[in-house]
Image 1 (cartoon, rainbow, N blue to C red):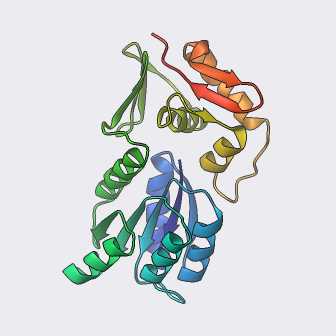
Image 2: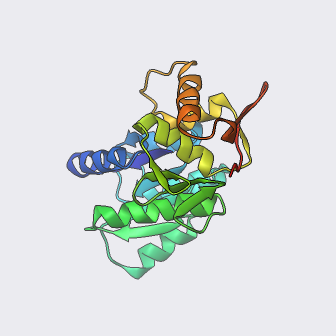
Length: 220
């Protein structure tokens, strides 16, 4: 999953980025509203963490611009002002959830997991497709109840497919959602990780749809 982190405080931004990367996300950053507006308009994010108190362009204006442009990614609002009217304004502008500073990083991660699940119509934090289960809270993957050890890249690829079971996902979509903007993307990387996953999971669980991409299907 690929996220946009918008926060002007460099210390907090670095702390949040580290926590998000440790949680398995690919993270792009913006320190002001103008850069955030551009990235949110042009890049395919699975979710955004958006501070409201931004230089150059405030967070509410950025959010309203995204929604007016038809951008539908879930947005978690951060605000330093614990006032009910700002929370209402953020939700009315198109925000999906909010956190008031200071907050615990664990709560931010939990809220993000919930937003990403709901965006795909999923209710449970434990995703299941046939004999494969993935716990989004712990990052643990199991096959028929037995743990499966995955690398970070393998986990991100499987998690993206698990959020979209039965749907065809193109190689370009996987590349755009699994790697941050500054990552050196190789067109063959996705095929390599799919091959590795097939060796650790039932190989027929990840179907190749010729000319289109991949599809995760339930295999008992």
